[in-house]
Length: 478
Image (cartoon, rainbow, N blue to C red; front, side, top):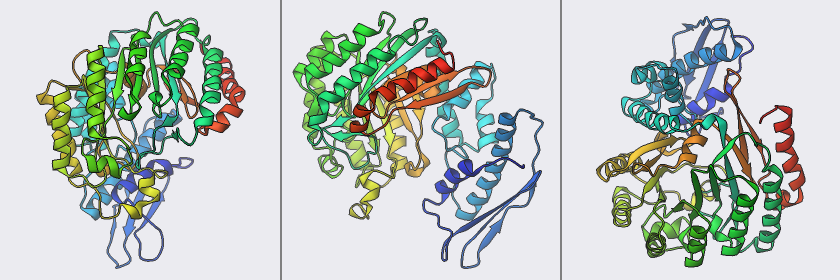
């Protein structure tokens, strides 16, 4: 397999079996031997215990470099999985899949009219029956929803507002505590408006179908500041074809009646109010700086004002929680009766305080995380919610996943479009990543990213605008 580099494929799978792996004295060591058409993998511990996979012959009839690489990669990962599973005694629910979008594999099979998805996921990726069934179910829902719209001729718009009331211990997004960055808010808004105006004419032949204000916490800025950004979008883009306009209100301590009324006045159709947990000690531990009572108050206020599509985010695996804590959170969510619920599994991110200050949380890790995720799935089914989108992240607890559940007709269309990579996402704001689908037979998907730092974004706004405009012009995207 000369000329093929599999390092980026191998490392994530190894880390699923060995969260910490060091090639030094006293540590596990892995060795790979790749020949023209054979592979062998060995794993050894310092005590002398060692396993070696029998050297396997690999072959493929694929001639295209991309398909050839994929065929060899999958054979390599299956061999590595078998070895590491034998060595550790572990099996992974998602098998060899370490990527963000496992449902994409099945979605593409549905597009081609193929069947037997569970068998395909087992034989090719060693995915468990439970997870393969979940991915198949979700892909079918996504396929049906997207089949009802002409998404290939549309695009979506993301607006990033990177400020938050405080930074949670698990967060590594480019978020900025608004109290420390107060002097940046107005300059940032002006720079963001400049970018919105500059890119608004990029796709005159396409229909803008969804708009998503995320962050950060968009409602951490004032009602009038947020209104000015929403109006900037409405004044510069043709929103007559918009099917969904979401503002991720997020933190209940940033939500006021004035802001909610403004969002209704401006035609926002979907909002999120995200508790993550309803356990008071957990909220304090993770740095949320709000109470469970504030979550209830914000939700009831939004519902009473007339919002009929409210999402809530939860996290399974938060510091110090066990299954009883998670069940309590679900019981409190049941009383509020949101239209959709996204259940995340905690992912340990390198830049998050949970990792950089890990000694502060040592010995207080969550218990029963897989049981939490299973309990959430059963709860959602019992209460009329259907899973409609799924994605994964690196370093997720117990190799699990994030799943969005919704009542019929309340699915987040933007979430599906961005996860299945089926539509151009034009993104504005610091840290925003525009995603361009170039369907030239190989369905390439490329990103153009803005800088994350707010100060840099403001200072380099003309460069950020030029990046997108130049890319669009260079690749003749219209």
